[in-house]
Length: 484
Ligand code: NAD
Image (cartoon, rainbow, N blue to C red; front, side, top):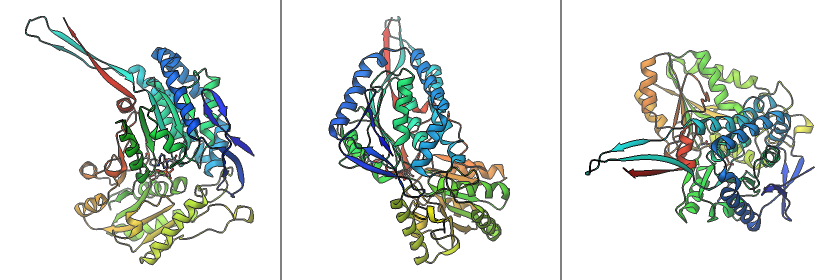
């Protein structure tokens, strides 16, 4: 059993208050997490401030980005350790984490090192009454100490998606990983030390939200900006905390993402992508589909094929290369998901497949397993059609016209992502333009070019990250005006 420690000013820090980390695969205890209190958070923020004013702040972009490239290489060199830790914490299949979570975790350092080296700023010449003129140019400066609050569904990937650009831009960070998935953030501390990242640039404080490390960090006035991924409700609490001191926030929050399947689609493409978008990572992907609208003429055929695909998914342990689906992240989350399974039936759903707890072998029986589940027979007002569940489940509903389906897809306070399946290119553009979301995929799902803007509209988020868009948050743009 491991001690999972905080990482403050380049040192691994134990505390007297600890909580258990159990793996959702079989509920066995894998480690004790050392919870940071106010003192540890204060120390982490002070270390981050000192590094900002010291070695890190004084480095050239070239020096900084060379170090970040080393960090990416070192993650890749220790790939198996990161993979092991991530799969133990989350229960996700190694086949998934080895081609998404860990490689993207490394890539996030390289891509933002490249972005910052290549991002130009503006230059304007202006006329002045004396005829001599003036010039203006903009320079980017770090925002300072950034508080990074992370969820559990893609722990390393989503954390480095923030830490990569924050560090590339010359900031220092204090990271609060999810209490469910503490290991890879601590492991990254070892990588930072090995690569010569100065002490205090990267800090990790473990704990929970309210009255714990999350709240201590986000209310700390030494933190200049806060970037958060997680539930919309938590984002609102963080925004309130950030109001004190008028500090900027970047919020990536929940979704209730629709897929729209037109009769003129390539059905093989639509089925393959919809199976992934509903069930990958056991449905615990912010971009995942929980509402599928299918044009009536192909509704029955589509449901039959989706059912067939869902029933072929193999639930199992992370190390089994045949596993397509792991457990949910925790017993607590399973209780939440199962309460929605119950609610769907109470509100009149037809359970096409799943709907409960699968039979697992005796040694896995204590794990947080649930069946992949498909419902039909519900209308747009049903609870499971309105609320984010974050499990391997979806409602499939028929529609008759383009205008109707766009209205229904937009009928939510969320606005993260949508998928549209059609072979009619005019329709694809027309529908994409009308969807009130931050990301639209046409004939695919989760195809990500990391240079593109990522984020949600409505209550799914504030701000965009990715490529140069991350610079908007992680730097302050300063204009210098020179009178000639
Ligand atoms: P969560 O909001 O429960 O927790 C996220 C983090 O916030 C955790 O580290 C938690 O400890 C911390 N936290 C909780 N309350 C806090 C408070 N009052 N102050 C400071 N910190 C606090 O989210 P989760 O359950 O870990 O993640 C699942 C959610 O994340 C889903 O809603 C999902 O849609 C969303 N998500 C969104 C994106 C995106 O890019 N939009 C990506 C992944 C996940």
